[in-house]
Image (cartoon, rainbow, N blue to C red; front, top):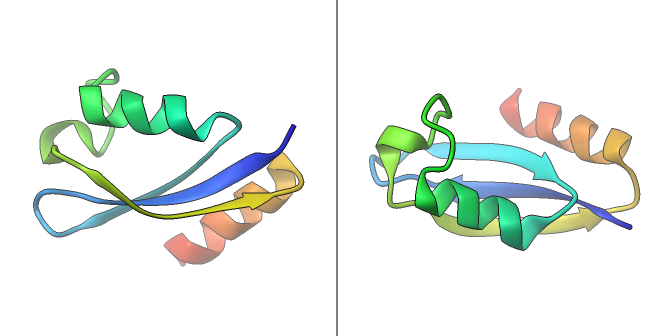
Length: 69
């Protein structure tokens, strides 16, 4: 099973990056506002602008940290 790093563009022009092992489900959760405490909740609608599959959770975390700076 692979992992994904992804980047969402929010309605207010900001970006959110995250990682997951189920990209389709996780993006759907952001779109639906499934997590009220999440950064994207009040910034919907969101759009997926980038996704890359990586081999491990560690690689996904490292890529996410690099994007976040």
